[in-house]
Image (cartoon, rainbow, N blue to C red; front, top):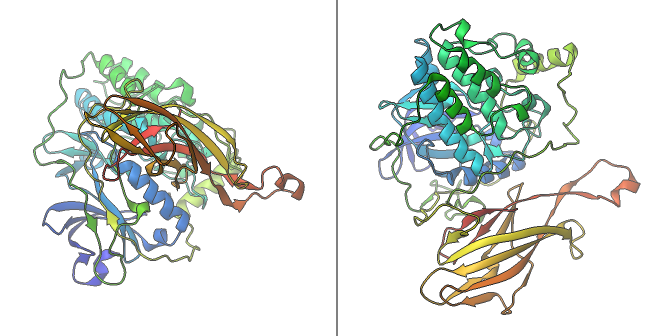
Amino acid sequence: MPGQRGDGSFGNYRLERLLGRGGMGEVWLARDRSGSAVALKVLSTTYSADSAYRRRFEREARLGSRLRNPHIVPIHAFGEVDGHLFLEMAYIEGVDLATRLRSGALAPARAVDVVAQAAEALDTAHAAGLVHRDVKPANILEHTSGFVYLIDFGIARAADGTAITASGQVVGTLQYMAPERFTGTLDARSDIYSLACVLYETLTGQVPYGDGDPARQMHAHLTSAPPHASQIAADVPAALDAVIARGMAKDPDDRYASAGQFAAAARAALGVRAPAQPPPVPHGAAGPRPATRVITAPGPSATAAATPSMRARESPAVPPVGPPGPRGNPSIGGWISFGAGVVALAALALWLLVGGIGSGPSPSTTTNEAATSATAPPQTAEGPPYDAADGARDGNFAFTVVDALPSTGPGSPDGADTIVTLTVTNVSGQQQDFRIDEQRLITTEGRSVAPKAADNPSGGNTIPLGPGSTSTIRLAFDVPGDAKKDDKKEDDKKKDDKKREVPSHLELHGGPSTPGVIVPIP
């Protein structure tokens, strides 16, 4: 890991103290060029060797860097040095909830308050289309002032992702995993289940289904009724048992619709109200995000300029997306079901004990790619939050996506077109030119796609707009197909020769120097 250089350095960082070590890598207290303290999460070289994992890492680091909530530790930068993918985050003085619980359970009022603060962070992530996937006490950090942060969004995935990686590994921590996680599907409600498990442990000092045999734990998550915290802690009211039971419902449809609803129900069960104003952010705990900078490692192992794929842009929060329906996956969809038998449970238990739970690529992957630079997300001008009626703003323009319709791409047999109808409004006091070629569609695999054609009433690549004027245009994006062919018979290949990526969201730009804004595809 990074300390092996002997001089205590990692790229442009000076490593001071190892904060933690896990299956994915290490977390260090480090100093950047300016001497500021930062938390550096450094992954094992195994991860950077897998090109598919690198693409996921870059995409989800970009998405994670856009999350704007006081209870989320901001990602300042991400990249690769000497074969190690890394994230730079704000360093918070405090202790994680898992460490605190070693001294005993919390009083119900404090337990609910801690979980409610973490719920605020989850609602922000879910609104941006991200699922944390590893909500647990070790990832809830308590500042010395009592302010709470939800940390480690490094394994967060888009809400349409799966719970199992391409190498067949389950991502998360078994004691807090929702039943549907074992089938390879997940959405925001999986995090709510985990948060309910955390509340139970915070109230009792015990995990809901024990921390012993993995097969028994998984079986309990799949079949056993949620335990009652009141049977262990006498100061826990029965009403709070009911809240936890609903949060841990086996069927995601039976859970609370959001983490905020779960927190509100927990407060109501105790007869306490949410604070009239949110608790103040501790001074210096997680200050404003720095302006854009490029972090490069000295020597030949890192490039000197940021690559477009590593550029992170901030954006206002986007409206919440509803939980997606079940998504099939030919390689893992039938791996294990809710009715799995003892043999499957035993097999998974053996795998968990031998291989552990992680989110990394297969160790057999040997691809080695050149290191790239790290890029910090730029600051975004303050403005109103995204509202579908008012439009999402970036620079001098406000955007509203009217619709997005799929159609077969006649010019690209390996993909499919997505036709986006967009209104663009000049919100400045001067005439501005909106550039078509700067707009991007982002796929679920993190691929950035430029428009291949546009129905521009003005013609050409730019649309001149006077102050307050609006223009409606249609952009055609050719969504590429996956290079991996389906394992089908020859007759079926004519119908679906290649897997197709799915549009995730739009990155719309008001100019070449603006950070851009994320707009969900309706």
